[in-house]
Image (tube, rainbow, N blue to C red; front, side, top):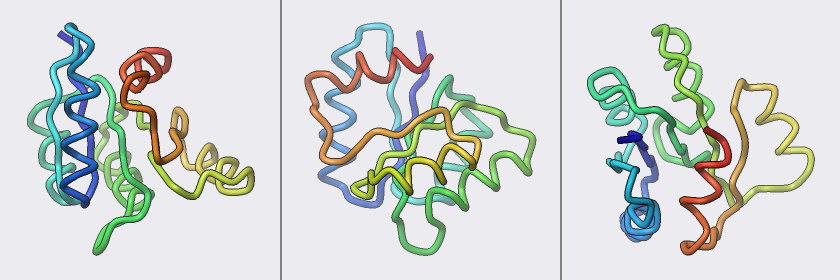
Length: 118
């Protein structure tokens, strides 16, 4: 099984993402509602890849990625964001993210897109 962690503060988006990613029978999916929860899950569960919402309250996606790296967790990270302009995309790639998925994403192709980054 390929462990996929999806992190987003919006419950509806988390639910859609979980259903969409579960379309791949090899994905075992868990979700987190906050950066703090994501850090705990990343340490305990050790996902193969993390999809991380950029804009979250308290601890945003880039801060979570920074904390992951400080803790020695080098899990590949994909940022998920509605702010997918070229300038933002370049700055995200400089933050050690493997890639960016624009919101709103297509639920039917999300699992295939994630698999392409593995």
